[in-house]
Image 1: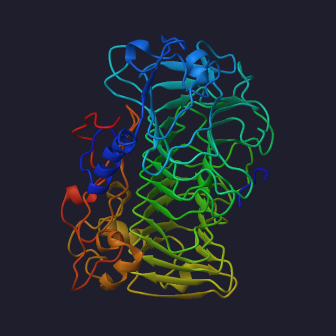
Image 2: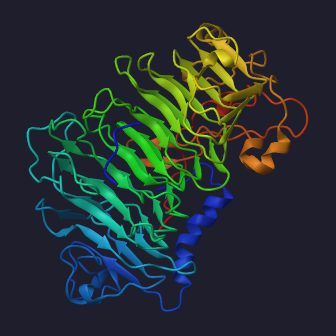
Image 3: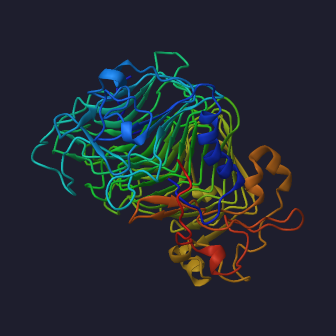
Length: 537
């Protein structure tokens, strides 16, 4: 494992019904609460105002550094909304004015009246709407810096402190800098905290936020930090959702930060790129439709493995990992990386994932399974390079069905693709195994996410029908991959799905791999963002 720390979608090309309900519900759950109030916050406001209109806005939100007067006396209640004006910036740690950080939020909503902290896209400063910004004022850099003008080694931006039923939405975080090994919870953008072994900090929604622009000095080994810090105790953070957030370190050194460290009960439709670690999770339950790319060996601890994602504990029931795209990770000079590290202790289902272009040395593991649960792999497309899938304990049971393996290690059978040092039970059928040369000659390439390009491709109709498994694994198994989401890097917005999923037939053969068939470019390529509209408060 990696070295441990101490113990918006504004519009959709295709909008599933469940997401329409979520977007509407984020507003309606607040509005229906009896006595709920909407408060407005802008950098030109005054904390002596009542905060109830845009013209009588506060300068701070409750819990922000500097909140005083009427703002300081406020007691947020279930259903209340706190609207930050788009385009405004609040600073912390001496980085500028007005201050606002640290921001320690300590008020809970209820299941029928969530507290909403976020935006109204019709209200903004400047000529067009942009997310409100939280910053320490440090300039961005794509390499290590000599010093931090405002050192955040012992500083954190936002803490949701032991609260329930709060939505934190559509904020930009930037300007973080650290010069030494951070204290736990420091040098981080957003923390979800809980009392030791307490179930507080649950049913939170962290959505549509944009995290970027961190810097650091050339501090020693282990000097890395976390974008988001979740609850680190197993089986806590129940109901927490991380949705459509962007963690994009392309304006940083590209090899620092954990995207998330802690609970990720429900992590979906997020974009994570140019970091040293993707999500490193406890209490994982559902992990789907995420785009994770350009993960590199950590600047702080070379030789200690980085991860595209890592699950160290999971929810005590069936768990699901599907429709993710993981690609372009680890250059050829890095060593020991583990692309995916999971610890199943119950029954896990992995399906419709597309994983390719994973570099690193031969010592790196492609997919490392570390515990004694049962894992089912259905209809994944895995371009493995020279690495292997590793099972660690004899009690683990691995089941591989309808997968497409593309490998450079010369393997031609399921067992030849496995590094099974401890005698784990490995079974499977209807898997298609090809060399890179074979796959490329049939049109399976990175440019089309290793999807089939003709009906004569080796994967087409090569799988068994597992319609009977969809009740346990979820209905998405009975459709092929969505290819996660599409990322508009110019506006840092997540749209999606990445492609329109195709229904698998209820009778007859399925195809092997994440794609059902070769049905034209619209079914095989990530779609560009279209029809963007402002539909979320």
